[in-house]
Every structure is written in C-alpha cells, then in structure tokens.
Image 1: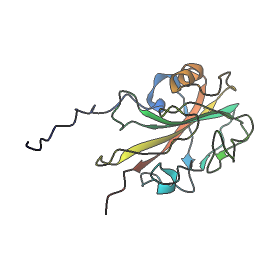
Image 2: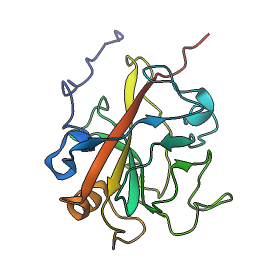
Image 3: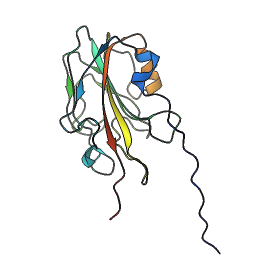
Length: 188
C-alpha cells in the first residue's frame, strides 16, 4: 500500500480579535505593560511555556489614577480556533498592586496574592497555561493584556473570558499590552 499524504485541514486566517480590540474594553487611556522575563516582540523564554516549566511570567504595569482593580488576560490569536486561545485570566487585582510575581498558580504554592481571582483557560483548567503552539507553526503571538477597571468585579473563580468581558463592559478606564512570541522547539 502506498504511503498517502493527507492535507491538513485549512486553518482560519486569524481568529476573532483579542480582548483589547473589542468594544467591551474601550478606554481613553493607555497602560504601559512590561515583564522582567519577556521582551516585547521577542520569544517567550521556554520556562514560561508548556514545552518548559509552564511558569507564569511576572508582569508589571504603570499606575492608573482612578483604578479600583486590574485584570489580566493572555490570549493567542494565532491559534487555529475561531476565538483567540485563552492562556490566563486574572481579575480583582488590588489597585495598589502594579505587578504580579512569576509563577502564580491556582492549585499549588505560590498562590495568587490575596483577593485575586483566576478564570478558566482554554485548556479547561484555572490559572496560567503556558504557550504550546503546534510543531511546524510559525511563531504565535501572545498578548499579555492589562485593564484598569473602575470597580472590583463580582465574578466567580473559574469564569470564562466571555464572562469577564461581559462584566467589564463599560468599566475599563485604561488598557495596555505586551506582545511576545512562542514557537514549538525544533527537533535536533
């Protein structure tokens, strides 16, 4: 029998827009977002991916006057899905916090700082799920998005991105992002 090659199913050209590009997150001010481990438009270190240790990276953002809380969303719009793949959702970050430490986990130490709630990622677990783009794909872009909100949110742990976007609609006073890339390691 001949060895047949079957074509891969076609991939969407690009999924729906990431959270910061949606109407629910409209804002008039910007936030500068940085990370001590990740440079803008550069590859994410392997320890923060599922090919490595799967540790969430530390994130920092500038203070926003009038903020009552912050939310973080990490999405991959290059995933072969109709919506960007959600890697992390966190909200009710207190207004006096302007950074998250590395390696925040939902079920082990270290736990998120007090009061912070985390949502369900598209792997189906709560908390950070690091990048794991399919082998052979061009680099995927990961949008680390921070939103300054005018309130703490009445949203249960494990909520989805859609739940979060519905809840923050009209509450975003400033927003910003850090975009970095990841690609499957090459076989040697």
